[in-house]
Image 1 (cartoon, rainbow over the protein chains, first blue to last red):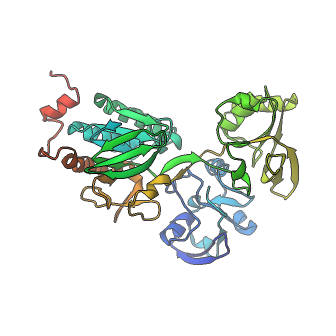
Image 2 (cartoon, rainbow over the protein chains, first blue to last red; image 1 turned 180 degrees about the horizontal axis):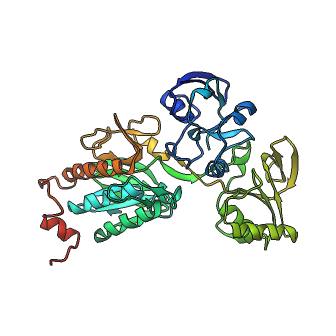
Length: 106
Length: 339
């Protein structure tokens, strides 16, 4: 279980307890948090679950695989700490994670 | 005007199999899809990615699955209306009148929406005034390359489309290729050509840069690009091309009076009918308690929706359940030769 804060583009925060094993994307979708579309359902094929991490969390979590990096080419307004939230599988070490959503998902 | 028993919206795997399920019970279908090819997400998003959960197919790809499904519906000689999007659906006595963006009209008692997550559209720039220039000096596909002759063009993207067009247009125009990272994901060979052209001074590459703003009132004068460290550069530009792949939008489906739950259409699991009689939804776009977005679930949904269409298409006949293994009628429709 990890407490994750999802921050909408307009600054609205949503604090959710996400069970281990779900992806950060699923944590948002199952709790109806706006800002993450996840059109493809989590198969790293659509780039509509794009989130921003901060530098500390970006370095702490597992590295991007090349498929994720390729998909990020399609995402809107990526930055150095952009990730696709479907590729982040929640474990205890995610406790306290903060992700920010972009202005739109494509 | 085209009259048919059923109009299927969406030519993905579930849409194709719906043709089969209708065909074996003697119903004729027409299929419309916004993409210019058959296969839906399977072809557009992951033609080469493996799929391991199609019953009796231990492993296949989006492409091979589509090919085999098309083989399976061959006997029904179905018309596919590709590159066309259904815009309007209105009630016309006992039928539905369906109009596409190319003004084609279908009249049908049944519509089966197998639309995945909606129609594919190009991903666009989110930059403030990008919309204003769209179709005039910002493009997401190219119809006539001569339009770009002798112009200053900024191409954005890192895949095959961006690389291919950078090579092609560098022959007739002044090209700058801009991409968010140093690596390109397009074909290695094309990337090599692009890098050689850069060395020869025939095009410019700017990485890792993204668009920051567009300058100009009635026409584009220049663009500002920005890298991850905030460094900006100005590029004199007449035209901008963006190749960021496709995104799925629900589009006009939202206007047809159907109940919606976010981007999905709630259905009854008895026949996959929506809140409108004669309009059904199957595959990823439908929702009900326990819905799984799996291709195999879509096949099941197609089988039930197809049977439900029978009643409205053949009001004076009685539907009888049969197996393809033993039914003479079904085997005739499938073109099975007597042994």
